[in-house]
Image (cartoon, rainbow, N blue to C red; front, top):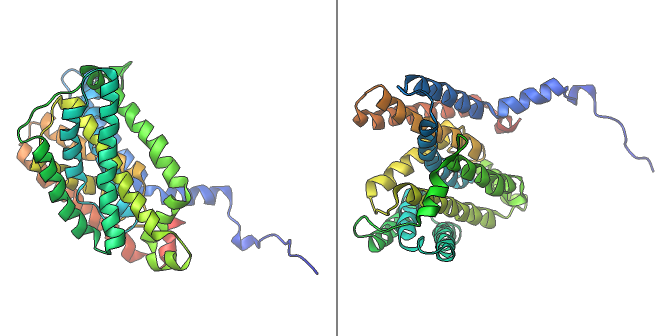
Amino acid sequence: MTTRTEAAPASYRRSPWEAWGHRLAAQRALLVAAAVFLVMFSYYAYMQPVGLSSNVINTAANKGVLLALVAMAQTLPILTGGIDLSVGTMLVLTNCLASNVVNGNPLMTAIGIVVVLLAGAACGALNGFIVVYGRIQPIIVTIATSAVFFALALWLRPQPGGSVNPEFADLMTRSTYWVPSSIILLLAVVFVIWIPYRRSVIGRAAYAIGSSEQAAYMSGVAIDRAKFLAYTLGGLLSAIAGLSLTALTYTGEARAALAADYTLNSIAAVVIGGTSLFGGSGSAIGSIFGAFVMRTVGDLLFVLDMNPVLQPLFVGIVLLAAVSMGSLRLLRIKNKLDLYR
């Protein structure tokens, strides 16, 4: 009996330069989003009358991280070929809950934080359960659950109010040696949640499902478990954003416009960051840069003394352009495997 130990033909080998070229091509959208953000933020800093101070960086970071967390929550279901239109209302619900329970002594504050995180994960799990076992389209499910979540938020906070532990709020929003605490929180979320998820079997399964659910099923991928976890983690990330919002505002408020704004902007951030709305391609890191691009647009409008009413117009134009570019990219590709080379 003989064994085959021959090396692969030269035509199938890739040089290190080709390998790096393919890696860069796969991350093209992420790199473009990062470059756009750096250019926009540099101009924003240049236009600041006081220059790039610690307060300017901290304020921009706090606002950007809020949207970045919600955009990450939106990315996970989209990777599976779904969508979550309840991320904004989960943010509002956990904000209202946090304004009730994240207060008192350090022990009570810690318990309150855990309660808020569990509530967010439970909301996401509810979405995932209905999508997976109810066999209903995610867009329908999350529209329905968003109404339920907003009703709960109104029940918790009929009027704006509440309180939060000042030490917790200061810890979440302050800046130390020019490094905002919100950026540290975002990095912790990336390293503790996103990277382990992305490298896990179930994380890779999410990409496979978004690429082709039928092929993933025939390959033995745990489709139900992967979808359920994606929506559950989305709820957890929305709860972290809700805690951050409570720390920034020291209060809770059930405002429909706020929920709608974060939901729409999270989709725009996901698209700008290079994640395909068809699923199977993208990264939460790209969504983070997309979120900072969206927030910097608003800051630039303020610095340039433009009418704030125009911001939704710019958001719509950016979202339409990003979706159009993503669709054109798919139309040019004859073999969908080219997306991952």
